[in-house]
Image 1 (tube, rainbow, N blue to C red):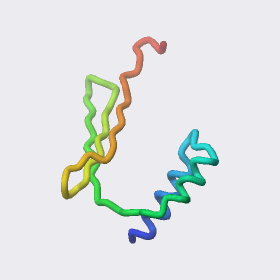
Image 2 (cartoon, rainbow, N blue to C red; image 1 turned 30 degrees about the vertical axis):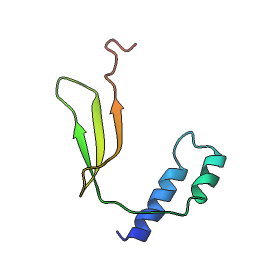
Image 3 (cartoon, one colour; image 1 turned 180 degrees about the vertical axis):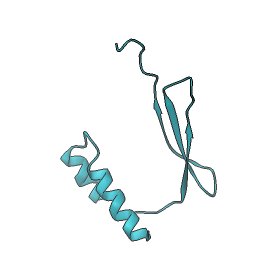
Length: 78
């Protein structure tokens, strides 16, 4: 994909984030500095644990971009 295609896709995804308010979409449109970085996602998971962690790093420098963690699900459906 071209940088332009990636930016358009990212903008669409950002505008469709659950819980994003209309004023947040307006603010997003007012941010003119856009850059595309090559990134890798390191995904930690295990057979004995139902949670997982994702760490997104800049591909060239290893700089931290973002991270998410999905905690273990409670046993017994609580």
